[in-house]
Length: 159
Image (cartoon, helix red, strand yellow):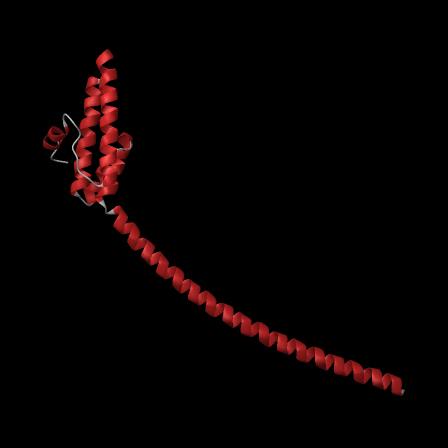
């Protein structure tokens, strides 16, 4: 073998050794980074679990709040039925109050709504009463509707 070929072979071996060392160092860096990322992922997972637990507790608190039942009772007859079911499992004073109020308003609207001219006037009065009742429910206050609000509470006290 000539000296040039021997020098070339030595150079190639040196280059291969350098490449192996570089690959080994790079592999170690990658392994270290992967380990750091795994630790970060575990920390983030722990934080996410903690936040999810807090959210679940907050959701339970919100759902058990009677104010939400009161507001839902104002959203059509389907909302009233949902509010009645929600209030059945966890009765609250404000939830029951507005369930009775809305039942009374709906029944007055159904009964008096059939009378041609009077139905229109009663409909407008009931719309105003509904808006006032909704505003009170949003504020968390138990204000009976004008005219028949107190009677609704007496008539439907079983709810």
